[in-house]
Length: 399
Image 1 (cartoon, rainbow, N blue to C red):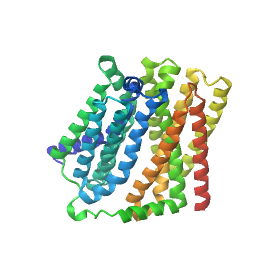
Image 2: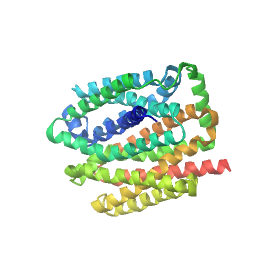
Image 3: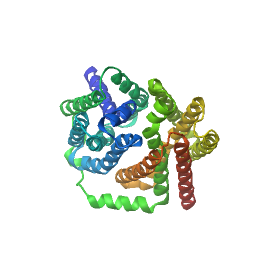
Image 4: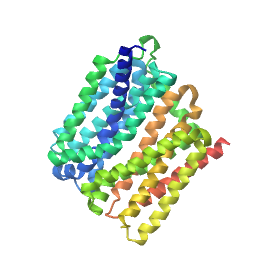
């Protein structure tokens, strides 16, 4: 490889990492600011601030169904650029928001746009890389994927120390514009015209039917949605719990980084152990750990009127998110195992369905927050049991 080629290769890796980081940045930098945003824009009640997170996921879910098929038909670059245009429009609406509904509309559009770089950038890697080259790109992307949730809330907190929450959206707008210009002018199209497939709603419908009919795909998709729902309920209530219930506003970003670190460590552990023990065995152990921790901590929370000590909450969430980190990737992989030739379309359907389950369940649990930990932990326990029932059903049907 020439020196020039080496530079181009590194540039491509950094660009893909940036495109993948946009979703996490768009969610996690918001968390320290959602209370101030809701107060300034006149949200109906204290729990309404959570919609700033959940409507972003709703837009992301819709985009999952749109951009994958588009990119197979229209090409990778145009699809990502269209998504980034929606992302920029959403960021502008949020930046200029004068009411809470206007903020939520902007967040939905921003989420819809953000799904394009998240989904299509990975397709770009598959188009042009293979073997060790693809592993090199994805290892760097995964490193960024793990670091961003740890660092992003601190970035949002730093912005709030010197400026208004609106500057967070200005920064996200700038990131989207830079990514779009960089992609358009510096990156070649990775999917040539002769390899493109016609846009086919019928194929997407057929994939949906296949996912819904296959017990393993359906069971693990529902389980993935349930675990992701617990994560959404945590994201929506974390600022209220740590900044208000426990008076940790100044340290919120540090607590969030600790729990995000649990997921990051789990992903590294999973990469080392999955080949030795298999996805199913690791997932089964992690899911039982998730449920057991939730049931035990729910009992403790009930005994302490919903206000257990902060150290116990920190230990519980770290261990719970460690278990979640073992579940996310493995559940998705198991769900896609039987899908064969329609894996791409099936992944879009499975991802959208699991996200829909997560938004409905996680959003509902978040709205139950009453100043105690009981609704959140009860939600974790209930969703863990749903995931356990879904995977057990899938495994029995598989056998």
